[in-house]
Image 1: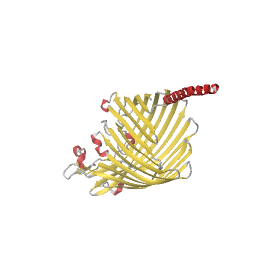
Image 2 (image 1 turned 135 degrees about the horizontal axis):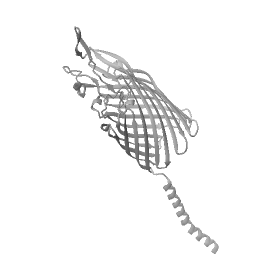
Image 3 (image 1 turned 90 degrees about the horizontal axis):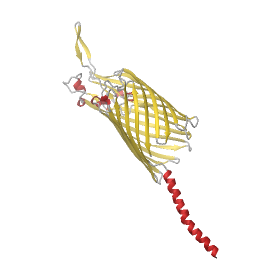
Image 4 (image 1 turned 135 degrees about the vertical axis):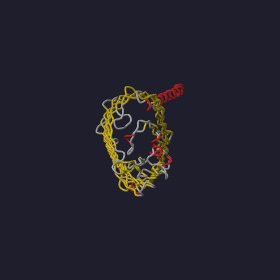
Length: 448
């Protein structure tokens, strides 16, 4: 009996000790988990051979100093996440281009027990307008032009094991700081609803109906009677422009095939129809659009990607240049007469783009990335002459190549350098051609 009591006392004394050790181990394990919050600083230096994106534009070097912060926190079935960055960009010679850029985004991913899930997200960004990605628009001066893009979106999904229903909506807007770019500002809404079916754990097929609406408040140059359409002050006055709305209707067929956890194919084929409210039916579009993306992991260190897309111009912008015609009397030219009351070039009726990417993890700390992209947009120029609309066709072709290397010497540090080349050729009303080369190196330190 005494021996049994001693064993009971020993067990009683051991339980608090075991509980304490378990609690300590639990705390240690929790302490080793990465924090959902992070805060970082970045610094980069860049040299660009054509800073303004114009024919024979000037070269310059600039530095970018920034702060980054964010968090990613799961809470049961929910997940909250947000990130933000701000950078001060200072140019060595073209100080008029000095600017502050920023980006902020956040979202809420939610789920319920009734196979219902979805998300809500928002973002806001500001930076120098990139002429290489603004089809149909070309910078003609060295003025600083900041572009602001804002977007909110939400989506809902029901089901998903075999059959699921889905819906989505988004609203976005584009604004420019340069007074001469008021005609390019726009806002857009897009909504879709559809159904998908899983053929198995790796293949998913779907179909959706998608509606889009893009409003450009200053799209068409319509000066009042008595105003000179060639007067620069008249051209620069937003009140002399009327709006245009582009309505799009799409039927999407989608397919997703996860060949392996790191390799797969995503495809979309759409019948698309777009109509303009005031720019004339000559700029309407009806036909097939779509996208195809392939990702392939050749080995654990080597990955490849290829993509193709053909889309009709979303967030359409317009380029307005009132035209004039020389008039002659007798032996010589006496002056010019404005024969065109409306000249506009849609941002893009259709754009075909191709891209190739490759990544190689040389070591656990060094990674090399390469990318190439080709894009060609069909741009239509419409002119209202003597009450008759005539349309001429142009193109906007660009080529971009880049090569970069990233080095992570420690968990909190990341270093990198990149070189890139871009060339662009526009034909039609806004015909021009230019190219640029850039080299940049950056460093980032993050606390988490």
